[in-house]
Length: 615
Ligand code: M6R
Image (tube, rainbow, N blue to C red; front, side, top):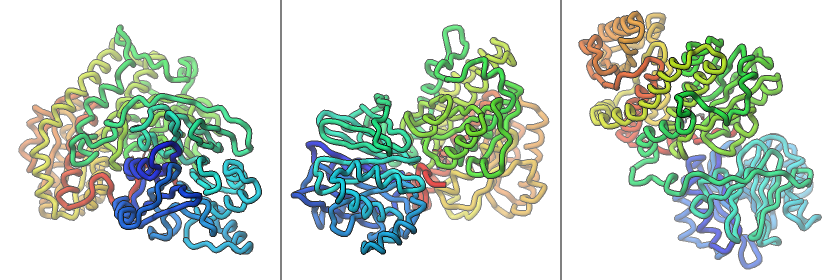
C-alpha cells in the first residue's frame, strides 16, 4: 500500500528517489510522484498510472537538480488514481511537499477547519491536509521536525509521512504510526523508505523506526524522537541481503525468479535451527520452554496466502503436539470476540510484517494477555516488533505481489514451531523429531526436482488461456493447497477459480461441473491413510463422469489415479504433512503461465498491492 522514498545527501535526489520507487512499485502502482528542493524552492512532478508515466513526464518536463527530495508510488484509498490525487501534495505556497502511506481517519474534520482558515485544497485525498497543516506549524516553529510532531499529534489513523520544506533545504522529515518506515544511513547521506529495498543499492545499514516516532534526516546524521519530542531509543541493524537479491536476475518476472529461489529459501529457513544431534534449536524464540509447556490452545491469524500456510500448520500442530489449534482470518478475528487468555499462543504469519489486519489481530490478542509468536520474512517490520517472539523465514526479499517462496518458508517455519512444541512438551520422541527433520531437510531437493519438470504444466496452462473457470480440489492438507492454487489463479490470471474440500463437492459445488471444465485435484499420498486416497480417487471419478477435464497432481508411483486423470502432474513422494511444500509449486507455475498467456502483468496484478497496510 504505497511506497515512499526520501533522500538527503550529495547525489541527485531525483535519481535516488526514482530508482528507489522502482523497487517499491510492488507496493502500489496507481500513480507516482516526486519532489526536489532546488534553487531555494520546491519542484514537483506527478502522474497517474505506473512509474513509467512519471519517468516520461520527467523527460518531457525535467525538474531542476537538487540533492534533497522525496517520492511516492500509490495504491489509492481516498480519491481516484488521477494526476491531481497523486502524491506529493503541496501547501498553497508550494513550499512544503508531503507523501503518505495509510489512512488519516479525521481528515474531513481537518479539511473543514483548513477551509475555514482560507486554505484551498485541490485533491480528494486525505493526505493533502497534512501539507497545509505542516505549512501552518512551520510558519510558527521554523522547524520541520517540530512541525511534524505537532501535526502528527492531531492525526487519527495509520500513517507514514515524509515531508520536505523549501526553507530547510538539507532536511527530510518522516513520521510513523502503524505503517512501515525504515531509515538507511550512508556516508554523508541518509534515506527513508517503506522498505529497505529502496536504498539497498546505497547502504545496508538501517534503523527501525518505532511507533509514533518522528525522524529528522540530515547529511551528517539522523535524530529520532517520539511525537512528544522526547529522544527515542532505536534499533540499528545490518540488512543481510544485497541489491542483487531485489533484481530480476535475468528472469522475465520477479515471480519466476522467486519460484526458482524456493529450494534455497526452504534450505535457508532450516539453516542453523537444527543442532549436531538433530534436535531443534530455536533459541531466537523469546518464549521460554516453561511458558510453552503451559500453552493449552493455539490460534493462527493471517491473511491470504499466509492464511493458507496457517491452515496447513494446523494439521501439523495438532498431530505433533495434541494442542487444539484454530486458524482465523486476521481481518475477522477481533470482531468476533475470540476467547483468549494467557495460556493461548497466537501465531501471526506475515511475509511483509506490515499487514494491518494481522497487526490488529495480534494487538487484540496481546491485550487479552495471550503471547504472540510472529512468523515473518521482513526483519524489523511492525508485526515481529510488536510480538512476544519471532521466527524469521529466510526467503529473502519477495517482490512479486503473488506470494510464492514466502509461502513455502512459512510452512517450514510452522513445522519447526510445531516440532519444537512437541520437543519441549514431550509429545514427540526425539527420534520421531529427527525423522521429520531429516524429511524436511530433503524437501529443498524435492522442490528442485519439481521445478525441473514444469514444461508440461506450462504447456497445459497455455492451452487453458481461453477458459473462464478453473476449480481446485483437495483433501486434508491438500485442501488448503487447493485454496492456494485458486487464489494464485484469481490474482494473476483474473479467472474465476475456487478451491474446495473434495468431500464437500457433493454438498453443492458439483453442480458447477460441466463439459470440459478444468478441475485441478491434489491427490494425497497413497501411503497416507489409504481411505483418504481411495476417497479422492472416487471424487476424481465423480467429476470426470460429469464431463470435467481432470488435472491431477499426484505422487510418483501413485498409479491408482492415472486412469482418471486427463492430465497428470507428478510430484516426488513426501510424508503426508510435508506434501504441500511440493504440491503447491506446480500451481504457482500454472497460474504464472496462464497470466502470461492472457497478457496480464504477472508481478503487478491489477487492483492489488504487496503489503496491505490498511484494514
Ligand atoms: O505480507 P503478508 O504475508 O501478511 O500478506 C498477506 C496477504 O496479503 C498475501 O499473502 C496475499 O494474499 C498474496 N498477494 C497472495 O499471493
